[in-house]
Image (cartoon, rainbow, N blue to C red; front, side, top):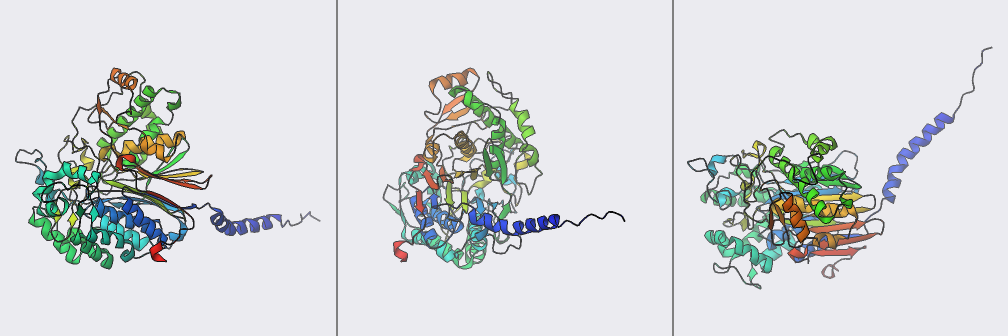
Length: 589
């Protein structure tokens, strides 16, 4: 009789146990995933932070709070942001607040909402060039022709409809009230208005709303915007069609075209935000999530950090470290100028630009006793880039938002569309209008960022998440072309474990963007020995007044603690941390 082995049931039992674990583990893991001990908000203005906190108290999530804060900033910071502008919202969406229409398995995920402005379909670079083919002075900076189709209103609607818990009638209410009742002018407003006073005076609506009888208003002057309140009310009542259709769209198109612009109703009705996969990278123990194209921020940030990955900064003295970081900035910004643009219009080898192999090749260009040899020539910069705005938010579910929003230069195009209260952007200056010509921030570009109808211009806005196993950092800043270098310097501090959020926003900054070929630095960013060292290596230098307005939220999982920090350069007043539970506001009880 042939031997017949006994049947063993152990493998079958093992498979059964594995299946049981597979069903139970996700719910167990979710139940045991650490949650923030409260909520934290950091914005550029205390009224925006207060509005966000109020919405969280009313049962809203981080995305509702971001809507409220964005809308309030659009009212009280007209020099940096508004309904007539655009930007990027970086989101971490936790399962409880997954998109309402999703059919896929609901898991934590990172998403970037691209609300960048689009070029009108009738526009070409020739509209900004004179008879000799040279850029017309100020044509892409001042007036209706300088404005792209705004994206911020569409982003607010998208956030509310897809990720929020509360209706726009609730989340926009604080901004509507402030627009109607007014806000008090403060020093940052005066500073920005002084810089753009001439352009604001040329436009009757902007002069009436943002100046005081044609002069920069004094501290304490109240700015009221009743037309903007009505525009916000239509947005709250009708969503996308409340801005990009109907009465608001008619007024926008008529007003723009009456003042030399080329907008059409079709330009407005066709505008949609785009959800994009964020840029992902690593630096030492940090996981980096940042803005994707058409923002250059994420790629340039990850590339610079990749170059520095195996540079032993800790063993260097202050001067040597500054040189290494400056060289990484130069090289990464060079690739920005050479390769980057709107991914819906040009093919960009993002995989290569983010590759560690490519970063190693770039790292080999850095020499301790000389500058890397990069082709280019010096150009002068224009504006100092202290406009734009940023907000960072986290809620008790772990949902988080980093949003950088802009009109481009201060007060945008300085053109307010009659009957709407909407101050328009001047983002058309962010396109390459003529090969080799620098924009107002001194940035140059290639054909990848050449103006085309319907295209989105390249940006430097860099909303970012930094993560380790026990810490989450949500950060970003205004600052024009210097945004990326500011986020880079803060990331290096986070990776080194030095200081805390308050120290990171206070630390003096330096910058290099390839062209113009010079180091720009705040007072105290480089000591005398460092400046002499860089001079010997061939670095031209220029000292700047303090710049940027970084907003940071930190969740320390190990200590169960939240921290928020607002840049002292912007007043440092827009930060609030509340422990759980988030109690209702007194007015709501």
